[in-house]
Amino acid sequence: MAKTESGERPRPPLSGEPLALDLVNTTFIQGGLRGSLVDALAVPADLDLWLEEHAQALPPEPARPAAGPATASHLEEFRRLREALRELSRACVAEEPYGEQPVAVVNRAARLAVSWPEIGDGAAGGTAAGAADGPVVRWAESDPLMVLLGAVAVSGVELLAGPGRHGVRACAAPGCILYFVKSHRRREWCTPACGNRVRVARHHRQRRS
Ligand SMILES: [Zn+2]
Image (tube, rainbow, N blue to C red):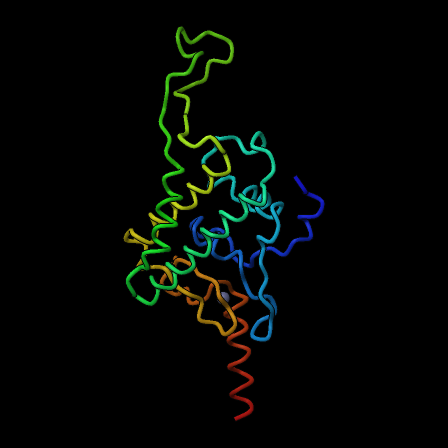
C-alpha cells in the first residue's frame, strides 16, 4: 500500500457521513468560491487509503490487508458508483425521481455485497485449533474490493431509498459541492468551515453596502 505518498494526498474536508455520501464527497472544492475541484480518488492508492480510513464502517471480512492493493479497474468501479450516487443524491435533494441509469449502477453494485453465514471447519467440537467463535461469513463475490464496493452501494440504497433520504442535504455554501445528512436541527452546512466562510462573506457584503 502506498502509504508514504498517500500521506500527502488531499483529504475530503468532511467524513463520517453514511458511506455512500463519504464516497460522493471524495470530489470537493478546495479554496472556497474561487477554489479548484479536487479528486481524492485519482489513483488506485487513493482508493486503498479511503478504504483504510473507512475500515470501521465497512464489513470486517473480507480482510482488507489480504486483499492486496486496489487496481485501476477497482478505481474505475468506485468512481462509476460515486458518479451514480452523486446524481441520485442531487435528485434526492431536488425531490426529483431517480434516473434509471444511476439506479441500475447502484443496484448492480449492491448485489456484490451478498453474503451468508456458514458453519466453519473448526466449529465441530469447538476445541480444534483455529476454531472460530461463531459462523464463518462467505461472500458470493470473490474479489474482496468488489465486496466493499457492494457495501458502499448498499449504504446508498439504504440512505436514498429509506426514510433517511429526507435528511440528505447539499451544502448551500457557495463553491461547496458536498452532501451530508442533517444530523441535528440546526445543522446548515457540511462543515463549520463552510458556515464560517458564509458568515465572513455576509459580513463583508454588509460592510460594503
Ligand atoms: Zn460545504
